[in-house]
Image 1: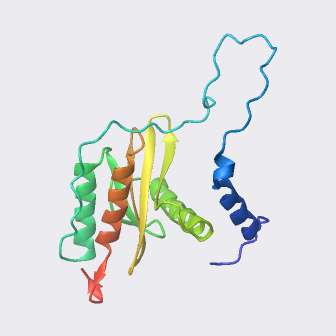
Image 2: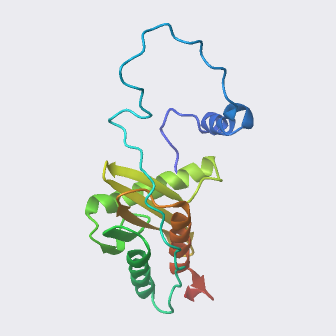
Image 3: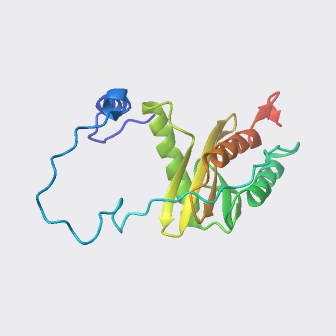
Length: 193
């Protein structure tokens, strides 16, 4: 990894992340003494109005696992995009390389493709600090649009696939998408599968 000019010390940050994941840190804290202030008319909200927390999509039917066809990488990537359209909600889907260049896409704009490169870099850097992190991420684009993005490393490099939908994809869908990306770009016997 290239040297960073960031003021954040990697070792200190990694230590902080590890401490945050210990059971002692997850233990409930003692509650604060009751307030003597008059109760407010409106109940507190979980998130401020300017922060959108992606809501899970409605439970999806069981996903049909992706099976990468024999053929060129282009043919396999096209099959992946078709599978995404059939199995995952959303009108926008894309597969990119680690630089954000579209391998295949449906209704994806240049901003989404550039975002995919940034997400891949971010998740790979987080893997250096916390290897147990998932290979997928969800990003709220607006109150009504959520990007679900999965990435995988292969012999051909890093690739990612994203879908924009009305809510966060379920964990099993994200895991299936990650596996599908990896299978699409897998080599066998030194050549594309």
